[in-house]
Image (spheres, rainbow, N blue to C red):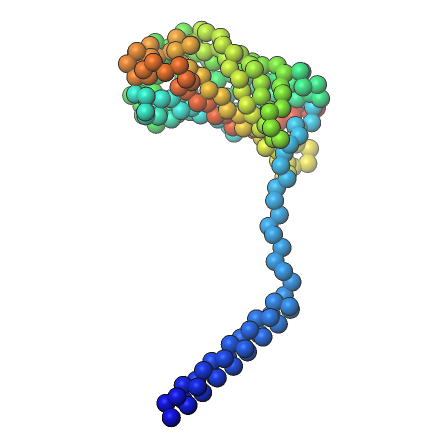
Length: 227
């Protein structure tokens, strides 16, 4: 009797599984297959030729500086200005950026004042840092490189800048200029710019590798008169 009841339960379970499977098959046949989410097209090309004015309210320069060899202090400069020149002739493409050194911020007032002092940026003597470059070359499907000159703390050195063009804004109001977005990165060694002598002696050891990483995010508007 017990085996008979168990067999009946198994039969009922099999019937339920069959019904569920049929229902799932019918539902799948009735509903169209889900479409994959659309992907934003990669911005492999550059924006249209012209001069693009950097928007200081939507552009930021970040950095990460090595601290006692293994640590990392992050900060940013809040005042960035300049232009980006785009041309069909890659040799004519250019970047001209000016950063207000006194606008440095590491979210620590005492440290920021120390960085503005003669021990580091010496902002009273060297109020700005600049980056100027002409000519670019493609280094991947979506990135480019420029060998521009960084002037910092009264010293000028060639610092390669790698950047990507992220695209143009799709929702610019009629009559407003085209707005483009870029991301760039670079690396440098502070000792080469005579910056932070005590760090070079006490904190960074004998490493010759770059100890400062730089990231720049820029939004820039096309100059209507030249675009």
